[in-house]
Amino acid sequence: KVTALHLESLEIQTVNDIYLKRGILKLIEYPTTFDFLMRVSNGCGSTTIEHDDLQKSVGHET
Image (cartoon, rainbow, N blue to C red; front, side):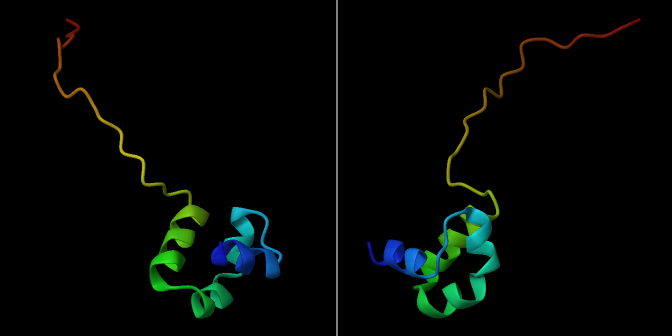
């Protein structure tokens, strides 16, 4: 809730705005919140994707 108020007061509406105003955000946000906002502004999420590492076959051309 506090972070939302900070973003609103700084007229931050897009993730690009977060990046452009990162200097002031670094001063007023907690380090963990700032790090999260920087990851978001750079398009890095915390979603993990599980891969099926079992390869079923390998094709070879002759």
